[in-house]
Length: 69
Figure 1 (cartoon, rainbow, N blue to C red):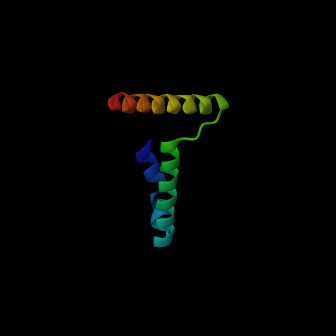
Figure 2: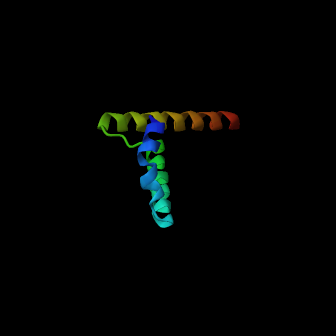
Figure 3: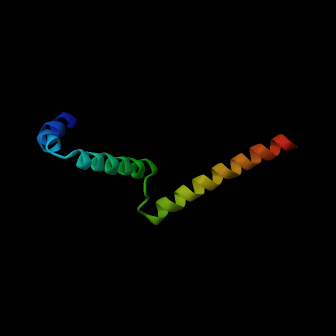
C-alpha cells in the first residue's frame, strides 16, 4: 500500500517548495504524536484509561512505601 501511495503522490511532492515540504514534515510529526498518545472517543474508554493509570500509581506508591518499611 505504501509504495502505491508514494508512486501516486511523488510528482506532486517534488513540485512543492522547500517551505511547503517542511510544513508537511512538521504536520506529520504532530499527527504521529497525536496517534502515539491517542485520544479516546467514548467516556467508557476514558474511564478505563484513568482507572488503569490510577492502579499503576497505587502500585508504585505501595512499592515505594514497602521499601521504606
